Length: 198
Image 1 (tube, rainbow, N blue to C red):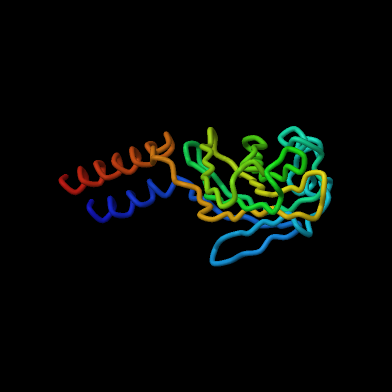
Image 2 (cartoon, rainbow, N blue to C red):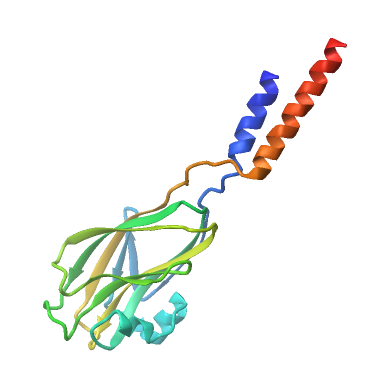
């Protein structure tokens, strides 16, 4: 019986899906350094191409900016998430633009299971750090895009450094199917013990 339990318990809890990396794409100026992603608006691509990568309508970026976006860079990836798991990352902002609302470069994150959100802009002091976290309401594939856009110009660059991208495991709650497997196994154990006694 002990041997069967040792086999069944890991099987039972392996039903919980782990975060699985699927793919990675970049556009514009994206580099890596010791596990961090450095996303720079210099040498960026036009908003049509960034919108195509991100999967949002191109004018959606204007809705979180204070002016028309021009060029940008972005990092995109897809992971598997469970209901209750949290997708998160840390970021640091740096901009060569002055603090103003005219050339208001900004950083964003877009989630296929969530929304398009602002992270920082030229009003954010240089070297400001922050964290982003989003909890999945349902299991599925989460495609996320993190990027930086120039606004009304294409030469003064802004940079977002991203690190510690992760998907936490939700609290393990065995599914009804798991309970069914366990119940069948226990009934089988009881029947086999009864036969041995007879």
